[in-house]
Image (cartoon, rainbow, N blue to C red):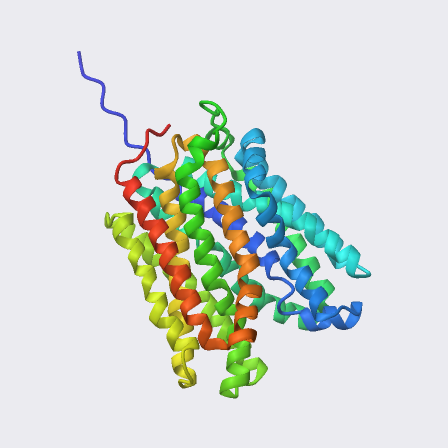
Length: 398
C-alpha cells in the first residue's frame, strides 16, 4: 500500500493580510483628515482652534473610553463583520461630516467615526493573529503597527492636493467614498471561513487579561511620551529655529512617517528570531533623543535628528506591543479582547500626552520635559521587559 504523502504546510495568506492592513490604513486616513484642511474648516464653519482640536481628538477619545468594551463587542459579532461594520461607520460618518453646517454636527459625526475607527483597529490585528501562521505572526503584526503612520502620511499628502482642488468638503467626500469602497472589497474578498473561526473557550475574564494589561500599560506610556513630540515639533521649529509654517509642517510629516521604519525594523528582527525581551531596551534610545530636542538650544538639525529617533522608536515599540500580545494571551481566540485593552491604553496615552507636555512646557520650560520623558520611557521599557520575560514561557494558545 502506497503511503499517503504528508500534507503541504499551510502558508500565511499574505494577500489577505495586506487587504486587512489596507483597511486599517484607510481608517487611519480619516483619523488625520482634518490636518491638511483645518484652516478652511475653521474659516467656513466659524470654529475656534479649541473646537477644531476637539473635532480632531474625538476619535482618539472614543478609543480611550471604550476600547475594552469594544473588544468584547468584536468578539461577540466576529472580527470580519466588525471590520466591515467599522469601515462602513467611518464612511457614513465622513459623509455626514462633509455636509456639516456647524460645530455640533461635526462633533457628533466624529464621535460616530471614532466608534467605527475603534472597531477597525481592534478587528484588524485580531484577524491577522488568526490568519498568520506561527512563524509569520510577529512579522505580520509588526507591519500592521505601521498603519497609523502610513495612513496619516497619505492623508496629509492627498488631503492637501484634493482639498486645494475640491475644498475641504470635497476631500472628506472623496475619503468617505474610498472608505466605503474598501469596505465593499473587504466584504467580498475576506475569507469568512478563516475569519469566523468558532470562538473556543469562555469569554476572557480579568485574570486572563493581567499580562495583556501589563503590555498595554507599557504601550500607554510609550504613546504618552512619544506622540506629543510630533505635536510640539512644528512649534519648536517655528519659534526657536526660524522655520516657516509650511517648512515646519513638511518636516513634521516626514518625521512622523519615520515611525513606519521602526515597525518594519522590528518585523525584520523578529523574523531573525530575536527575543522580545532583547528588543525592548532599544526604547531607551528615546532618552538621548529627548535631550537633543528639549534639553538645550542646539541647532535645528539636532532637533530634527532627536525627533526622528523618537518617531522611529515610537513605531518600533508599538510594533513590539502588537507582536508580543499573542504570546501573552491564554488563548489566541482572546485576541479581540486583548487588542481592545491595547487600543484603549494607546488611545489614552495619545489623548493625555499633548496636554501633559503643554502644561509642563508652559510651567517649567521645554528642558523640564527631558526628565518627564526619561521617567515615562524607563517605566514603559520596564513593563515591556516584564512582558518579554513572560513571552519566553508563553501560555497555552488555541
